[in-house]
Image (tube, rainbow, N blue to C red):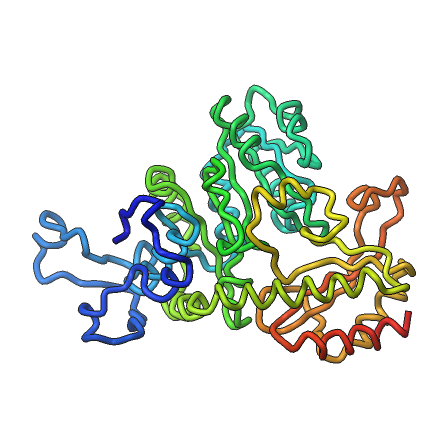
Length: 392
């Protein structure tokens, strides 16, 4: 089943429901059991060292039956050959980056990528002599211009954090392959339901599985996906030696979240699009940062790379002061104030962005509000937002 060619792969809904499972192994149980154990033993020493069964498990830091089912589902959803679950999104991101760089290498990365990722690239890796060039990334030529003889990694995030700027995945991947450069793309915003970077030639896809893949705000997890060849090399090194493995119970919860991923993403998309359109016509709103709207600055990429949009957007009020954004968020009833997103609940958080991120020449920060639209009713959320806008 796991070796089907792409054209014979089942739909995402079917993958989430059935892929990677064999009920005959678990006495017909509809839900696979949790192998909540650290160690797997052997009947004889020979079985341990000389006649190892391909289905043998050894130690949960290396592999676990529960985690493997979840990994198989996510790999299939991303149209990859193999996945690795980690204990957090940053565990997946940092391990995958480390698999592509060594002391003295150079990285080109999107400047609007996730904040901790920027910190890892620019500050943490600097102690090993790894240098980083941060670019806007929306112009393909930027990647070629930023490339150096010692560049080993292009790091993408499409759409990117806060401003949801996209990169031309196939074009950037083409430049990278021409020069032997590894590519990694964070696909947390779109999820594998709405985008598959591997199909555009990207080498690795990473996710904060805490977000949409889990969907219930009850786990912290990450995942990396790629070809069997590339993932095997990473698994034997960073995947095992850094020790950021996902716990079996968290893997089981992540598997549970995947069951409803397609229908959740569709609901997030429908509600967010409706609210974004209403917000755009409101007199107290300057603009919305969210792909797929009428003023989308990259409509061609949206049409070519994305099959849909998710529940995360950034709202720029006409009153762009810190005080106004605070009043707006504090006045919301159904929106929690929190840093994460991707769960069932709606969230709002005032965010100060560099002017250049939003096309402004000034150096002063621009205050915006990042909003994650959950699974509540659209009219309830709109009434809540409309009431809060009265305060700004």
